[in-house]
Length: 640
Image 1 (cartoon, one colour):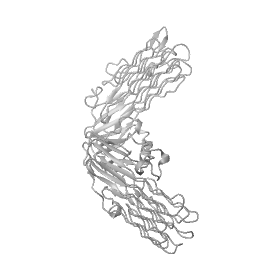
Image 2 (tube, rainbow, N blue to C red; image 1 turned 90 degrees about the horizontal axis):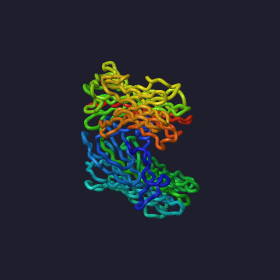
Image 3 (cartoon, rainbow, N blue to C red; image 1 turned 30 degrees about the horizontal axis):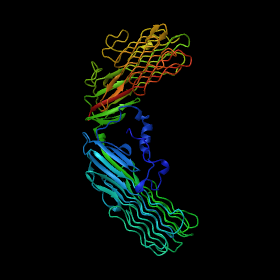
């Protein structure tokens, strides 16, 4: 879902019913609300690396939304402006994962003036199983994708008559989906609403409504895409919709104009939406204008009420009007394609963000929660990263600079991973609730006081031995924050201030923090030289932190990589140590996810969220503060 939230197409100012580029296409991309809400609920999950890989088709284009429907997990590409669906890889381990469903809706026609009929809705074609195509037809056939680009064209709505003079409306523009292995799927633009003394409503995907001054007939529809428009009488008829005929006029010239036909409903985007309703007919002063729903515009009334435009990206027909008032433009169309990327029936538990890759189900926790089994899981892999330590707090006097924060400890049993040695296996019974704790990073942003260790991350339950990753050690600092044991952790904080040596990491043979398995490495030492004390770099899950060096802070150590989700993602780097003010023009870097040390009077950078990176150390200056540690992450994977 990395593309969610991107704004595509032309500017939002052009995102109405008016034709945009050549061929009547429109712009003004959208942000899918379901996806926006998903991001907000997940704490900006798109910033957490490595969470979203799936084993379905790999494709780009449009606004992308992932969602569940029953037991199936789908990815939809939503096009509200013309573009390209670029398929770059086919699915893996997904039943019918290469089968693509589509919805193609053309632009709606605009309403006519002079007792003008409502505009017809844009043609409506759908292949979603269980949903009708337009005109009451059953769903069309799906197609199997190949690795290739597919062209998507989204039709604009017909332009309304904005001068209020008598005349017919304008037809909508076709929408289509084409590719090298399919017959082009074309939906026909909506028919125009008939105007003063015209012969009748125009043909289209759905037909336009007939005018009222000479009882013009409604326009015809395209087979399996929509319905005909309503007939005019003493007043005008409504435009046809994808779901029903436009209504006929009734009564005298001040009677009731025909209502627009209803639209058709699809849940292809993950939310059920009814689109492609016809526009309502216009009426003389004193009469009742034709109503419309499902994206169609209501008719206007002569003497002050304009016809309403069709709704953007629905293909709704525009409302007609009597002479003297503007008519409604047709609504622009939409094209949506979707395909299956997984199934929640393959998940044997709930909790976290669930994704699928390489025959595995992966639960990713970026905050604490519960893992609840629905089936026994005899063998599971885990990757547990604790919160990183904050960088050290520097002295406000003398040349005493602070160490970088140590990375959060890492526990894993993933086969072949360098930190998997001696870590226990993991199995879950069912039904059982397990507690997942994701450790916070050590608090930073401090001018005085003690630096802080990161918090532990863990997996715990009634039938498992708790597996805990230790929080990263805090960066060494100056009085009154002298506390050597605070600098030990999963990886040790860098030395600084009154602590010459770096903190100890957690590993076999560690001088202060021995464990039977390695979680990280020690921090680097401070430098004692003519330039004063400079901070050592924080230890990482992959290496020891760099030592300070005559004014230059130590480099934060590298972390480790994990590719269980299908993409190699790096975690648990140490924070950079604080340099002497003015000595180093460039702050020492941190490792994977670790923050850089302060540069001059600047702040130490924080560790990256959900990587367990250590925070950058502060430098000697009463305006310099230390960086916070990055929070941790927990991943659990098992065969689907």
